[in-house]
Amino acid sequence: MTDYRSRVADSELAWRMSTMGAILVDGPKAVGKTETASQIARSVIRMDTDRSARAALEVHPAQLFDSATPILFDEWQETPELWNLVRRAVDERGDKGLYLLTGSARPRDDLRAHSGAGRIGRLRMRPMSLFETGHSSGDVSLAALLQGSDPTGTAAELSVPEIIERMVIGGWPALLGQGERAARAWVADYLRTVAEVDVPEMGPRRNPGNILRLFAALARATGAPAKGTTLATEIGGQRGPIATETLSNYLEALDRLMLVEPLPAWRPHMRSRTRLRSTPVQHFVDPSIGIAALGIGSHELLGDLEAAGLHFESLVLRDLRTYAQSFDATLSSWRDSQTGAEVDVVIELPDGTWAAFEIKMGEGAADTAAASLLHFAKKIDKDRHGDPAALVVITAGKYTYRRADGVLVVPITALGP
Image (tube, rainbow, N blue to C red; front, side, top):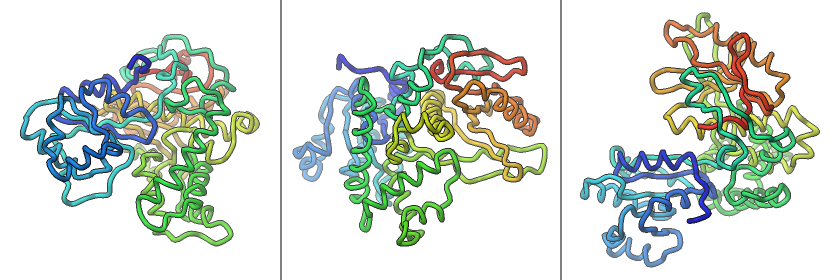
């Protein structure tokens, strides 16, 4: 495709294909999974629309594997039995990079399905980061920060109102080059489709109105641990709280559609007997989802910068997850349940190297954020965890630098993988 825009996942997918027989590329609908996988596939079979392929799967499934490899099975979850067939084909051929599976929802657990461990690798895709859409210079490498490097480079020239507009539009490939009005309509339609079609297809008694209210309730809880009782009450409204089991089913559906991506709590060894929070912090996979669920846009967010800051946190987390995944790092949050002290993000490498991040829209808040990071670093048991590779404040500002206290300040519009 001549108009394909490069993704951070491109190099990760190529590497994974060199190490495994098949790769599952998953993520929400409309994030570009099929386009990315198609760049390296020689054959594409669309299991959701190709009736002949579905018929062959029932009568003579071996035919599906006669095409030139790598073969892409798009929307494979429409025919879950394909999973075991791919696994078996990998075993029989004994080669790498044979098959790709893309899908927008996880099928229910099936005891007849083999895990695929050792045969089928996994790659998660999300909506596009600012670096991928061309709204970040990418001069400051997240990987380099975790190696202790000083941040150098120039941020893309986006003002705070322009960054807020990017939050409203989101990272959806279909919205590249679109303005806010068109984007708001697109995302609103996306949510209605999820509520009216995708979630009800997953099981009985899935009320579309309740799903839309759940989106709004989660949007109001963005950046904070969401209590089930609060969500149940907000969804039920004047009728009273919905049942706990019903809420669990709704949340499971959004998780299977990969639209929510809570940030788990990091529970490090501390120097004191600090009681740490264990409840995940709620975030959507893209900030535009929560903003659309609330029915607001740039104008409203500019009038309520505190709320805008919470959705800015979701924007930054989307980008950090995308960049960190490329080098196998994990993201967590930290909060002292006794004092309320918290750090927005802790990124940890497989070898135990870690760095802490605070997210603030305004550069003027860097002093407070830096003090919070330094306080946090002093409480960690460094005999067990070592010193942090970096303490970083991510802002919506223009300047990249190391403060006198050692804390780094990095604009999100300068950050890249």
